[in-house]
Length: 99
Image (cartoon, helix red, strand yellow):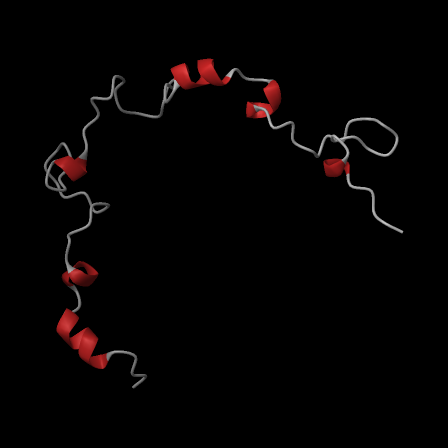
């Protein structure tokens, strides 16, 4: 006895009703026009949390890792191996040793 597969029967169950688990092959199941969605692109609506609108937000990564007040932003990497806390030569020499 074979198993009935809605994917092989135009997305219909054995009783002829549509099986909602089977995709329609349409963008967003036909509920959204792909052209208008593309025009909207990356636009967002509503208000975000903090910052100013218009894309002119201060970015510490573009300002030597400093916040607007001049203090270092700890979220920005230093570019050093293990943030300068470990000598990479020593770490490499030890490798995978356990003791």
